[in-house]
Image 1: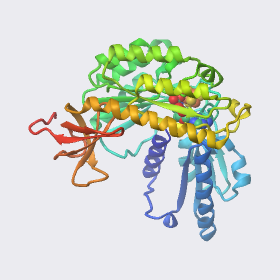
Image 2: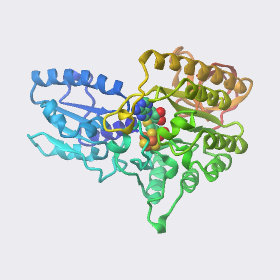
Image 3: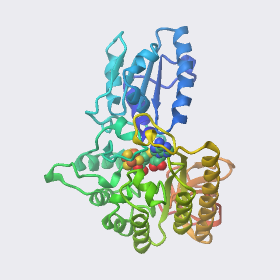
Length: 427
Ligand code: SAH
Ligand code: SF4
């Protein structure tokens, strides 16, 4: 979501006549888009802000802006602690940056309401054939570890007609793959007025029907809202990819309860079983937090059991980080650093081993790959992604944006490799 917010900021600045400076020292405007999901992001940011202070003291005409979740979570304190900051705004207020820049305002300004959507702003996409689409903003969940509800506000779904029109516009502009974005995408539509009521599964069907859109992804669904209609859509809609990112967080029902995730281990595994029943080959990835306050060895062992049982194709693993204003930051039973580190090592070993094992099912198959560009490790080869969201390195001739078929001959936990099947161009 943050990466997409940055694209909106870039798009908006371009429309105002700004262009990217090669070096920070050459910039008239230094703008940070911040993340606050874990402490490490905050700490890195404070170091960057120190550099901006130095650059501003060299040239006081420079404008320093800070947007995003960190700005929102410290609000007006920003100006007390960092008086050289000219403008600060929360993630729902990106459009106000334009107002500020156009206003010749000499006083510091902060914008922290939740009233609007940045989804309407122009974006500057990293690749012309792939686009993010923000379908909702905010989150009504209260996961006890999470800062997002306080930085992004209550959930608001975008109008389905407006979203479909945006997808049509993107398709006409050459986009072939869209990723629908929201903190909890599958609760989409509950707040849409009755005459336009649309469920997430119905929205997927609307997007699928847009000519030119060959691939649809979304992130993240919440297991509590993962219903059969969405799972069936993966089997039925041609463009919807065979990949679901289903955040687990913990395999222990006791810890899930303390996290206020509102599902337990049984319900989660039941969702996985339903996915496997309808879409047997579906790739599954997840998010897991290690070292939540009070997590015992037994709780952690239950997380490892779920990892073994599900066999994820990949996982993002995080050490619990106490965030200001969240319930979990006040809980007793914080774990010592070495305990968290040791658990993390065991978790990563299990995740990677199972992902490597699962990936062997692709060896010997011919898979559709969307070409992204040259391989990072060997520029003579190409790199792209399969519908299962696996990175694929291969020998071939495709151009970025082409869909081609690749014969897979090897698989690691993270990547597949192979060669383009000759005379196989899909499009
Ligand atoms: N709305 C999405 C993503 C939330 S942030 C969802 O619910 O899935 C992405 C991930 O960061 C979360 O899934 C969680 O695993 C992790 N995360 C969030 N807050 C955290 C914290 N305080 N400490 C460690 N990891 C955290
Ligand atoms: Fe945070 Fe939970 Fe909302 Fe995800 S669903 S953004 S983890 S509160």
